[in-house]
Length: 141
Image 1 (cartoon, one colour):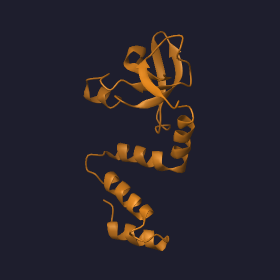
Image 2: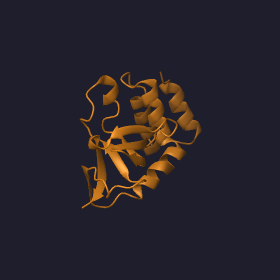
Image 3: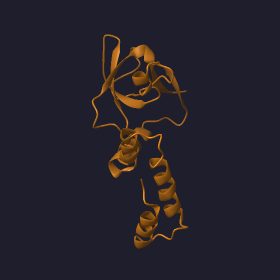
């Protein structure tokens, strides 16, 4: 549980008025992080994404994203290591599999119809391997 009184005081000590945009953004993020539907693992992932390292990783990916793009079927011969992919939103139906649905990552290897992906924001976790039919590639249009 987040102690919102301590959070407000900490923001004031750091020089942010409780009605400032920064204070409001920090409070909104803390409400999301404090939500009971987030597991500790999910909460940790959100915090990693908002850490300076996580933001650097996201900025690196954003530099690759074309101005006009869409998710397309994975294509052998067109898709290469380092490309951005997403696990299809409906790829898996089991409880454990559904945790992967919609996650975005970077291709690390392709072998025999299986693709190894390192998810964005989950760099401490092992890369995951998926059948290529369950992935989509981010393509310029």
